[in-house]
Length: 133
Length: 237
Ligand code: SF4
Ligand code: FES
Image 1 (cartoon, rainbow over the protein chains, first blue to last red):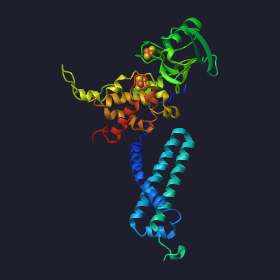
Image 2: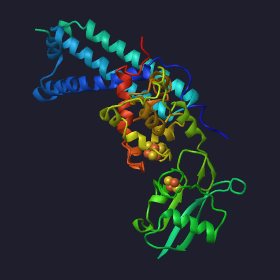
Image 3: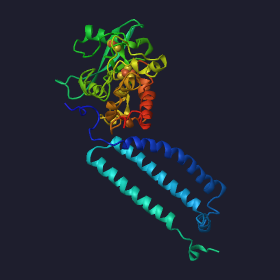
């Protein structure tokens, strides 16, 4: 007879990771509501693809505020999304499949965070690239 | 009135897989599904296996899937259901026979949350432990649980992962965690805060719909989550 393990909870302690993940999902969700709505209005309502170009971005990134804004959105959205995926994977897969799917999520997440952060931090307007006037 | 039943039968000695059998019995419209099952067992086919005890919605032994919903057979009138009335064992537990499922994992989780009053201080001699009506109210809802298993076996998170401690055990933990007289909160945290504890709840609300006692199960789970995230259940530093 196969039954679940002795008391429905793996003995391996989690040091409250799941607890912090749960709280993080709520808080980041709230923050993203504001950040993402702000982003949506600026990029797609007040402006549009017709007037957003390299110069627009370059001008924006003159100010530290927008770099911080984008950085916050990048980190919160990516970790929020990745943790959501991890939750689903955790629910529906077992054993080696679960371990490797979660590992690749971590690797993919860290890679995207690194590339995104790198761009936000190191971006320098280049006159030649699109005509800085 | 003639009542048609379709019951999912399974005899581990004979059957490889469960199969449906149809029955028809003469009943009063105000009879309950449990009466129908007893009639079938008594008059038509004595091999039908089911659990029941009180027949009045108190013991919690006859929760089953009736027309696709977790219900107590002793609490539903046949006239309130479209026919044929389909009867299946609860989902997510091993079927021992017909409608009888193995509840041992369920009770193991129940025991794991230490569902009893834990006292650390000296017991007051010849005195009761006083509690204000407001403090009593905090866990009123979760005292009503009869451990039928309807909530846990309606929970998709539990179906996906049978290691999940499940709504019923959390309801039981809630009953003691929020009792001002209890002093064993941190002893329950290990199970509730672990990988397969409350965080596996995805607020699907199936448990609320399933509970024959009308307990707001998801709210109770939410209260435990909140208390955990505020650190209210952690051992004192
Ligand atoms: S909470 Fe309700 S559904 Fe769950 S075991 Fe208790 S009485 Fe049954
Ligand atoms: S037989 Fe006791 S609850 Fe239905």
